[in-house]
Image 1 (spheres, rainbow, N blue to C red):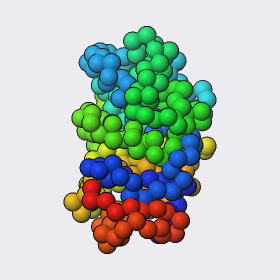
Image 2: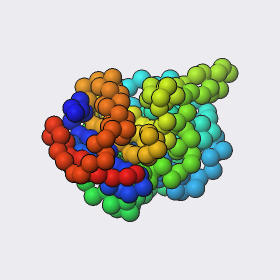
Image 3: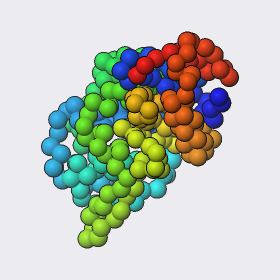
Image 4: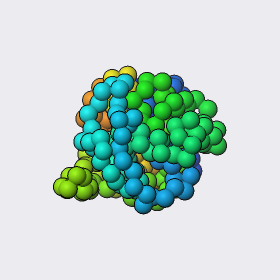
Length: 262
């Protein structure tokens, strides 16, 4: 079996055992996968999710000049901004969450560092909330820990597995969609999802899925195209249903497998 992604890991949810890995301990840029950490840190602070927040010029991406469908001056509840940051991976929304964190961005990053330490993510550096910075780096193995932790937040699970939602902006309803096209697709039972892309990070994908009665967390980093990440996910889904899982530890095409009953 070959994977397009340069770094990958699959972990059994019940056992925590590694079922497949490829260059899983090498830190690389992680793009918008960062937003799962942003979401956890915001929820940990127990903010008022109904508080109205206005998107400001401070939230505009001046590093990559990425587009956003959320105009400056748009006022939404923190819950809506939270949804936009996670489901549609909007960078202005993620920046606004950090900016309005109690104590501002400095306090937010301090809380992120504390969370990284708590989760044992020792090969991870996060310097800002969106993932636009190539200085936000992690390994597939560390990100699996992050994904498992995120799966314990009902709000994150609900939002990242939602296909789309309507948001009222400046007097009109605007539809936003999940950046992961596998969410809601036939044959997929997705329990957590987040995508990411920058030129430095390539196409990245985190999912927690259920397949053939097994729950597993998968992390795919640095694929050349989003279709390549989705193809890798399909390959892994087939693997979870394959007789390979009934065999002892073995190596196939440079990837390591361990027997596990997740």
